[in-house]
Every structure is written in structure tokens, then in C-alpha cells.
Length: 221
View 1 (cartoon, rainbow, N blue to C red):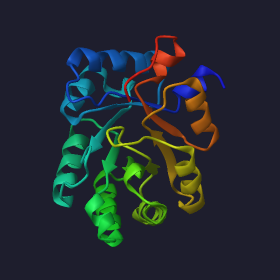
View 2 (cartoon, helix red, strand yellow):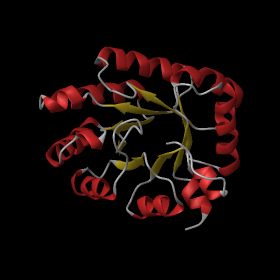
View 3 (tube, rainbow, N blue to C red):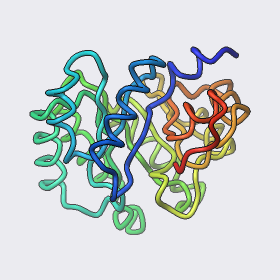
């Protein structure tokens, strides 16, 4: 697999709480140079990035990140603000409390409301697999599919575990044909990137790709 194939699947990510403007510029420049699928950055930097780079870069951000227990009203407000500031893709974290309560209808309704707010733009749903059992993962595959979301995503990168092939294989069995898969968290080598792409992931959430593929070491996400 050549580098360009990997880069074309990468959401080049910087979500550190202490990320600086200079570091955000650096990943933007790398994303343009290596033609990554997008950059994934904190909402607070969206407007500045959009003003500086405009349509030359595909801007992704996070909603309800990283814990997901914001109210639906708050998540929708955050989504609309991000949309106004130039985001084109949105990675939203589900409410784990609803999972524990088996209130899967509420999860589906929340995701559908967020999808309605962004229309044709891309919604990725982070289910944070490290906190879930198999039955919960399967139920969430159904929620994501029913909501009209575009992707199911394994992890925030801030939980107790990242992407696993077992989870991707489980997703493949239970998501609808309208749903793509994004692996995130813990990918540190070319072999990792290739493994998840070969397994069917069309996006990879990572800070490591440029450093790994250019021989500069591993990133933090």
C-alpha cells in the first residue's frame, strides 16, 4: 500500500487540550502537503483555520468531546456553532449513561437531530468501544445506522483503549450499508494503518501518520 492511499484515509488529528495555534498551523500545512482526508481540530480553532485556509483544507471537529455526556441541546448548539465557523465534518461522542440505561432510542434520536443540523455534511459517531460489551456495540451499530449518520468510529483516543480489529470486524457485521468505519486511537505504525484500511476502514483518526510515514517517529493519538 502506498503512502498516498494511507494519507487519503487519514483525519490528521490534534485534539490536545494544550494545542497551540502554531501546532494547529503545522498540521494544516502537513494535511495540505500530504493530501490527508481532513484535519480534526478543537472547535476553538475552527474560525481561524477557516479564515486562513478556507476551501484548501477539509476541516473536521469534535462535538461533546471527549466524554459525551453533554445534553442533546448543548451538542446541537455546539454543532451549529462549529458549522458556522467552517467545519465540514463532525465527530460526536455518544452518551455512555444512555448506554448503561439501555436507552438506545435516545441515542438514535440525538444522533438524528445532529445529522439534521448538518444536512449533507459528514457525521461520525464515536461510541468509545473500550467502555462497551459486545451487545452494547451491536446495539450502537443499529443506532448509528438508524440515525442516518455517515460513520461509526471506535474511540476518542482519550479513553482506556483505542481501535481494535475485533471491533472493526464486529461493526462490519452489524452496520448498515450507508455507514462507513473510522478507526481511531493507538495506531502507531504503517502496519497498523494498512491493517485497518484493509479491514474496511475508510478513515483513520491519528496524529501519527505523517511522522510515521516520513520516518519521524510516532504521534500521540
